[in-house]
Image (spheres, helix red, strand yellow):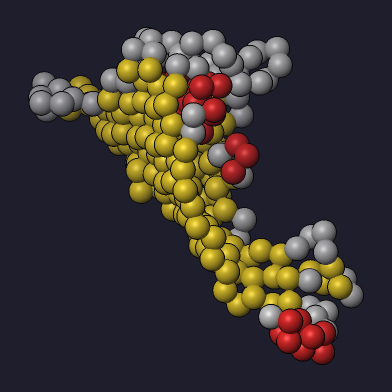
Length: 219
């Protein structure tokens, strides 16, 4: 249903699908605001960080090889409209970082910039929170992100004793990343960041306590 008035336009009971990705929600466009933009709530089956990157930077991979592109970032790329949306998705794909289940967050865009704010969900069996800012100013791209995963199980898969992981623990991981460049390859090569990993409830299986005495004497 679409409603129009001098104050704005609203769409409720929005439903559809594209490429097997279903979406639903409500949208509004307040005409009289000083900074008019599409507002509302959208729920999707899946969301992909790569889609947002393509929207802001243009295509970031080579179509034939799938490798990161060395072609310059498009100066005119970006979302066609400004938005301020509450997002929810069954899965949010972060590429090599994994998939966030039951994702919630805010999507805000201005000319040349997209922000994901107050993001939360589950990754593996841990709790995920984070934010990201993707920008493109006349072909000069930047990416800033902060992410944190707490309470995720960590266990050795390659080193086992009596069928059990030799070491297991609950892990807390946090990191920040910042990069700039004029191509997708530039963004990768110029990336800088920092992070921390802490473990709690560490369990070690198969350790011979008697072997520690000679080591402690040497120390």
